[in-house]
Image (cartoon, rainbow, N blue to C red; front, side, top):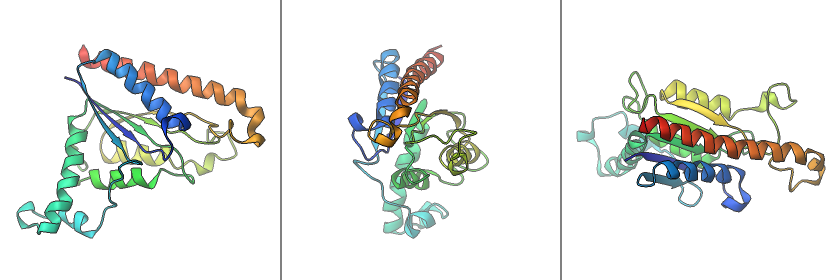
Length: 216
């Protein structure tokens, strides 16, 4: 059976979150193709992971046979997250832009799941797994816009997920998501609505295509 790993990180519920709406559309399209499949859903806002500390970090660079009880407990979580990633046939990650970068909860997941010699390094264990990142943002940071130099979400995640972990990364970018709630952005509503509809359509299309490729 096909397995989808879905990671949400928005602090807002689906009705008020652009990224959650898109990941939900992705999941719906995926499940239509794989009704008997498995969805592993990590909601990092509702159930945040601990940030990587010295105990968990040192456990990743030492022989498990030598781990202290504290290291064993900390490393067990990292192994659990790595196994979820390795089991997945596809991954979808919600990465809303907060203060020019990703939510700290998503950074915590990355720090925990990146294990040198396993999920990262010369032969990453999930290499080639398709990952769709929903990089929503309140404004626009597209090439040619005034805020292009402040785009630290796509650049960072491309480097970490692809360059560091060997994953096959693709992006869906819903922009101008603050337009409905910010009167100063009222004239941008048509662009926001176009971006939103495009993102929802891309999510459904990408999920269906990935599911069909897996079944082929």
